[in-house]
Length: 295
Image 1 (cartoon, helix red, strand yellow):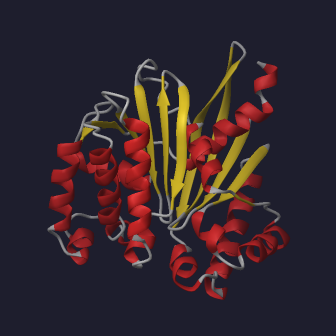
Image 2 (cartoon, one colour):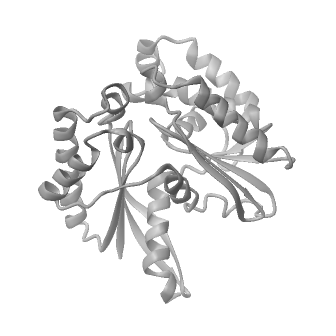
C-alpha cells in the first residue's frame, strides 16, 4: 500500500510517496520516492499579493507530473497542502481550482495552526525521551511554526509570518519577530532543559554540513559557528565552492537567523534534526485518518 503527500510551500513544492507498513496491528511508513521542485511561489505572493501566470503555469505542470507519478506508483490515498504563499495570494483559491481541473489533484490551503499540527504529527520525537520538553521548530519560505510539547502533551503552538523567502524579499516585520520572541518567553519560561526539534529542508542541510553524527543533537554554538562560516561566503561561492544548489544557497542564511533567534530566546542549547518535515506529517496524518481504526 502506498500513500502520497504533497507540500506546496513558499520556496519549493514536494511530493513524497511512502510505503505503508503494518506490523501487529500498528502502522508506519518508509519513504519510497521524494521529488522537490523549486517553484518559489513566495516571490509572487509576498511581493505582489498574487501568484503570477508564469508561476501558476509552473505549478500546474508540477502537479500534473505529480499526478502521473502517483498513478504509476499506484498510490491509494494522498493529501495535498498549500501553506504560507498560497494563504496570502489573493488568487490562491483560483490557482487551486485550476490545478484541480487540469491535474485532478485537490489541494487544501491550510492555516498556520493546522500546518503546525501536521508537522508535529510527524512524531519526530519517537526515538527521544518523551518525558522531556521539546520545541518543534519548522522554518519554511513564508512562515515559521513553533509547537511546545512536554511529556508528550502539546502545550502551545503558533505560526508566525517569518520565513526565508519573506526575509530575502524584505517582507518580514519587526513586530512579527517581537511577537515570536514574546510567544517563546511566555511559554518556555517555566521549563528547564528544553530540547529543540528542527524540521525542514534548510535545517536538514545545515545538519549535514555540520558533520554531526546521526542522532547527535546540533548545538546552538555549532549552528552559530556554521552560520558565521556560511555568511563569510558570497552567494556565488556558496554555490561554486560549497556545492549548494542555487535555490538553497540564498535561503540558508535567513533560515539560520530564524533558528538561532528561536534557540537563544528559548534558552535551547541542543536541537535534534530528525530529517522530517511537512510531507512526513501529512503521511502520518493519512495513516491516523485511514488506518488507526483498523489497529
